[in-house]
Image (tube, rainbow, N blue to C red; front, side):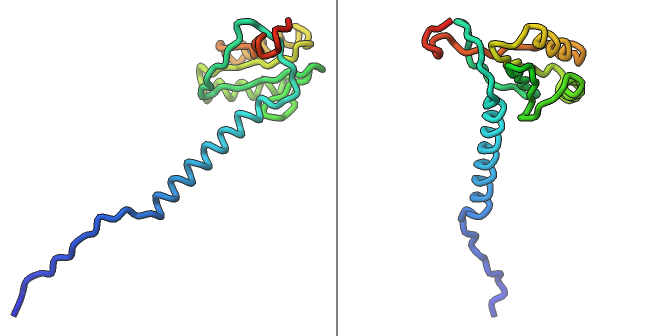
Length: 143
């Protein structure tokens, strides 16, 4: 009689189902984040030009505020008034202290409207404010 235990050899195979799940989830994440960033920049705003304009990397808590030529304020494809913008900026400052705001103003927007948006940022204690411009070379050297 043999009383020995049977030794089962474990196979060194890689489980494919979890690997495929991870690849697809990563792909979906990057697709969604790319679309979100593109939507913020597709508002009908003709940016002013500057010779020192450069593309910056996005940071967490960063928000684009688009100011159309008619003075309308658009955030995440939603038109809003100054009061609603103030509440959005207050929430962003609460959840992302030190967050940044990038103002994309049409080249024909009155300075007063831009100052109103900057005042909302100051009231929300957002100090990192930048302005989006297009490089002059990209516009064909026009000023």
